[in-house]
Image 1 (cartoon, one colour):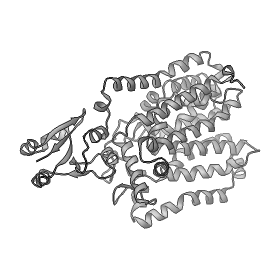
Image 2: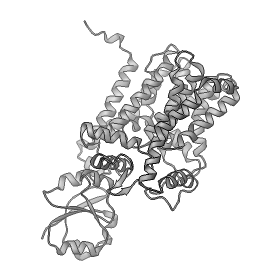
Image 3: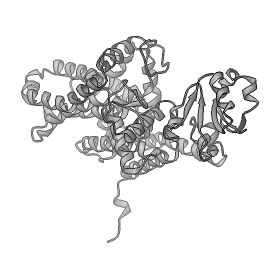
Image 4: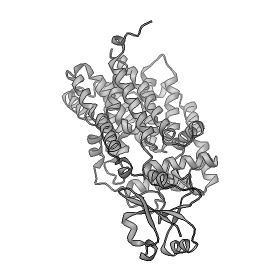
Length: 467
């Protein structure tokens, strides 16, 4: 039987091509500091120690900043495929595929190709990036998507009752993905929609609230209980600190793990318009042209509330990063899908939207061919691999990097001052030390004369001491 290529959907071809591109990049690019390598290292330690309750940022150093769902996923992947970059990122590629499959039916309902929303999502830079980044944001975005779409289906789909239970499953997964923020990001837009659409009675009758809340509790509460029992103080730090103090103050002094992320007020909108190009601009244009009937179309109104609430919520926060917009990529794609037949130049827009992945691939090829990849990528991987010698310990000057921890499988140690460095030199045993260029002036000149630089990148050098 011959394969008829003409019958294969071009949107399916683009979707598969972009997923393969993302999978290749997941394999080819090393883990980079600080965030991605940090979460990969936390998962590596969990896989090594088999401590599935409290994630550790270093051996014996508890990581209270985030719940463990993303760490569990990477840990399971490590157990199945070994400890490597692709395994660390593989769960996030799968989650992205699940989201694409979840939203495809909304195109079919409009008489469109199933993979149109997938093409839109994968050509949004923010979504494509996080189809291969080790972080908590992809799992949160999936949980938000599951909650919001399950709510909609639970109200309107009279045949498939499982959506009413998936709504509560999504809440439970969200509590394990990033905590109570799942309720903050989904509750208000749902509440506003219910009030304006006068659906309170329908909402109350449609959902199994007692059993549903029990499902959410069964999914999430056991881990919170066990985490607090194993490391007392976790709940206070995570609930009060991470969800209130961090939001209100970018300079929160209780932050045990973060690094400065202070942004100007309203920066979340800049992130949205920059990292969701070109589809957010098209969505806003269509919303403006149809502003007179937005509330009348319940589906569009629901998607608009979903889209706007997250950036509105973070508008007053200075402590944020661009992945915070990830949960609203799906409503952007669904709004575009809703008006797809009215977009006369849709094929041309898709061609332009492919510019980001094409440029990313060309950039990777360019730095690889020019031998600049190892110099410019923000990781310690190449310094460690190119300079490793059997049985020679490796150190990092002052603070260890997360990529250094990951690629030495936790064996790298830190040297915090000149006294300790001099003691190490006096032992007359060979060792390697990674030093940031901006911290070279903190090492005594006498010690520097005894260190031989053997490799470097744009931020760091690795030195060998050999008596």
